[in-house]
Image 1 (cartoon, rainbow, N blue to C red):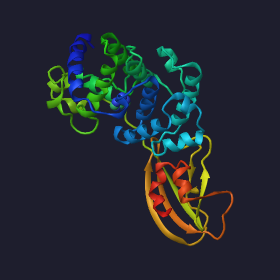
Image 2: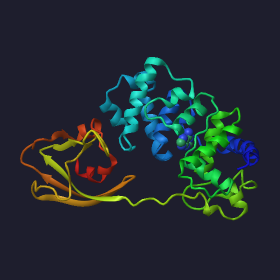
Image 3: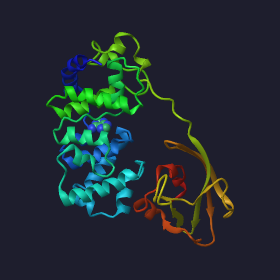
Image 4: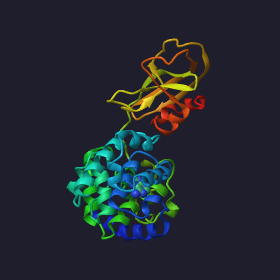
Length: 330
Ligand code: ADE
């Protein structure tokens, strides 16, 4: 891939970004710590879903020191609904390191923080430390594969590495704007679902895919393997004004988070169902097809933890997978 095409693309992208960038909460009053929080939240969660949660998280934990001093339960509660909860645990561990040693000042230092991979380290270095380190996410892969009409498989790590090296060669001094502009182009013009808005693209005159009328052919991706389907029964057990919760195992999907008693396949008969509904939740590799049942029990059965509706709302982190059933908790 020739560097010249991207060299021409850089100033056009920066000029476009300065006019069209979205006003997003993490683009104000940025520190290395706030950039780290934002990039970790944004890794696998949509911008619209992150906005409010980012503001709430920073209101409670404005600094790495504040976060370092919190309990894991509280951190998970503030992460509730964002998914991929290991990010929250890693961020909590990272905050303890930062509170003790200060924020790292090199790529290697940032990359060594828990939960930080090449992408997040690149983004934090570019956005908050002024270091010219590329951050190659799905958006960036899409815009570059189209710019070059490159039919390599973008799910291949070697292809990512090639794009990162190419970006490294043209990185401008405005490292923060350049990093976010690439993602922004992918998010609002060269969009992930549906046809790109080439009429609004600063690269329309440079983009090989567009010039060839072949935008839809790129990026080329590996075929996704099918998700495993798990059938489960979710029992919302109520006794008086309290509801039963159990903690998920420490390892695996939604590790250590709270749930209504859940059984793969059928559940024991706790009693007559007062209500029943079906819900589905899609994870990366698994789909849960759930039957939810509301049952009034005569006693607070072991081994569950019994909590009020208010405690559930305020203290216990309940993953979004169970949101379909919280209407029964009143
Ligand atoms: N996605 C990942 N990082 C982002 C950022 N800084 N702004 C907008 N979307 C993003």
